[in-house]
Length: 126
Image (cartoon, rainbow, N blue to C red; front, side):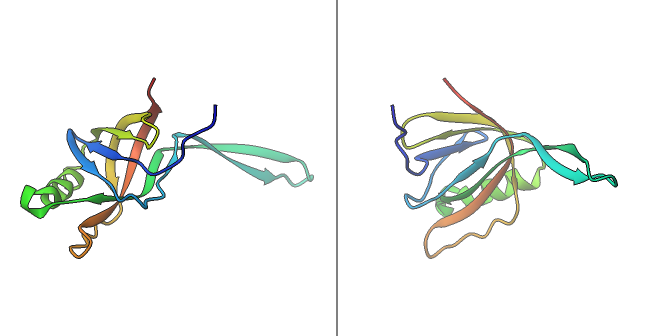
């Protein structure tokens, strides 16, 4: 069976649903470990591992100021607490986890979108 590729259809952040731009190229890095290979003085090598969080980036959420979407996203980021997350992919599959909004929130009132980076844990559902 081959994958049905495409953008996410929607994201639910802390219980609030947002649709996203149909041209998004969202990318997910699942949490885990990063490897760094370092040389030793005798020419042999060693590997050091560092834990890394999950990151979802490259998504632009549609927001409606009349619904307070911009305030909700700012408040969610500013409170510093992790919130429940789920995202529905183009093929109907779901990725869920616990996230915090990281990076800048730059609301584009001309396009009605805001680029969002989510950091935390992600798991494929089903």
